[in-house]
Image (cartoon, rainbow, N blue to C red):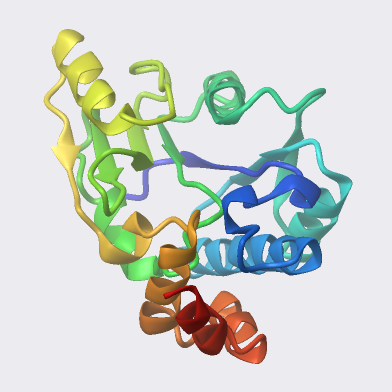
Length: 221
């Protein structure tokens, strides 16, 4: 039996997205890449047939993009950061009476429905938590909670270790799933190299090839 789950995808405003990529991408390119990565994530979630999926944002362009994918939004009054956006979605999951809560970021374009299915299968029917670390092992790229308020979530490095410690402090035994697609969040120029290698079929990877990113990355050394 499918267990009802709310999936939250927090997204900052596109105009200020991915500032660590400024050495190699123009503002318009960073905006386009952020939108393409979000579309890649929403496509994977649609293929995994999870419902409801909520994008948490205050950006009108993100709201419009989510609407084109048939995804509802939780609209923030202000951009208070990733942690607050996730907490808002957790409260919504509790309000709706759902039994599980999953959050993944909007900048993991190589995530697949298979990985999402594996993560959702990591917990049995009882209380529990599961986490996907970033490729560095320092950040948290996904968190699955049963019930949705099993524990508070706090993002920003070193969130992965902090989440494991907090879960154990609540008597929970966290499941850990290193997943290569979900683990790759795109923040720095070196991440773009991995995206080109691992995401040839993504919208995001197609954009990078269109912009001749391999040559531009080579120029950085």
